[in-house]
Image 1 (cartoon, each protein chain N blue to C red):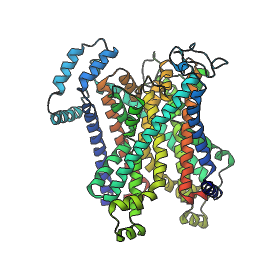
Image 2: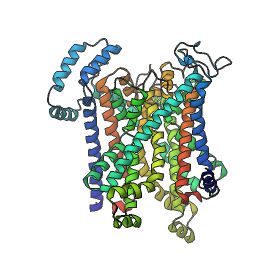
Image 3: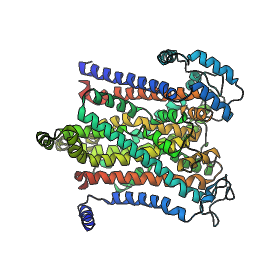
Image 4: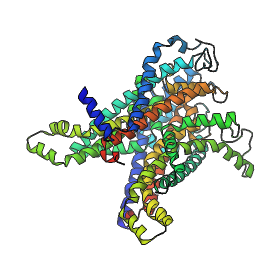
Length: 334
Length: 287
């Protein structure tokens, strides 16, 4: 590992820590900027809306005030907040008292991560291939007809696409289940039936995310590929008599992909925002639905925990993309 | 006025004003007119809960049907569309305004101010906006369209800041800035009379993008039930249709039309921004 690479990785890691720090601080500060103390407000509102009747509000409130030292100086609260985070103590749910927020997040996280990772990878791969193909001179009329369609798909928020998909494929045609992660009667086992069930439920949410993103990657790749194909080294490769397929993949796509990976890092935030809503629409048992249920039930610590989790996992994802980058671009590796 | 049209025509013939830009603007204009003229033809009381017979499909009596709370969808749509646009525009203006000022300050003065602005905007750019907006919106007791626009605008400035800052850094090195400085213009005068005019294309482009992003965020928050629920907006319509399981029960006229209008808004904004790129950057026009 050279010094440049070490420095690159150190900068990126510093960025990761910075985002986590900012996120945690925002999460701490915003509720405290508002009048009243957060627990009292949340509990009062919970009581007003009748969110959770089976909880002794006064007892919970007193326990929280003692635990979080909400009368303590703000700096002390802040430091305690960090200590709790390091112990993965995110508080307990009001609505499902006394379930721990960390357990709830732990149950939801695998669903979200798998769905989002698979959908993003499919969208990224097919979109980039399609875009590169579009920029190639021999692109036929048939493939070019996709361009307006993709422009439309990219501009519509993909959780609205999800509603349309549910209506046609789950309500009218009944090919796929309309909601949930597995059948409610299913006992989770490691066998084919369970896997098939999960896949059947994941298909439509995945399709919604893929359809909503594929155009973005295709259009980006097309413009990158057009400028790469104008470079001298492409002309030189043609003059050398290299087979077109080799030029397409190793001279064209490989270079155009660099900008795509940068775009991936920048767009992950909005993809996650959209995916949260897709989960809500499909009632998919991931972080998005957990957040939605928590908002509906004014479940204060769950909201905070999920939001924190979203920000932190996105920061980690960004870091991973940054780690991939040197593998693609030898200029950084040097 | 004739001069304006002459220059418009010349630009069109040179290919700077493209069909894409015109189509985008036409779609947006149509939607704005829909919201402005529409109220003259419908009775506002029909959009209130229980005003008409519930759950009627589109037909002779109700052009777009009615929802399960007895509201006429066509009337609702006419009143909801301008509200959603309003929030997008307010958030767009605030976001771009704040973003421009921060970008100018960062680019012009550099140093630690620049460092702080850059670090915060870069960190916020990578965070999923919905996460922070949920925390802010969830802590607000009385939501209204104005408050909603402010909430969304709080995360709508980073992109503009980045663009403006980068442009200021480029423009600062141009020779005409040097000339102005030698002529004795102060830093503020240079900023507003020399740098600003050259930033306009970028600011307008950021504005279109910010409005689009703001509407996206507003509808997202409303779909989560964090909006001003008593107001008529497109996002709230989606939220109520979700609450009543309108998709599963087959009331397509409840969620279908708002989705079409939302899609048209985004397509209009998208085409406008693509077309505007071509207008502001003549190099693209010849492709």
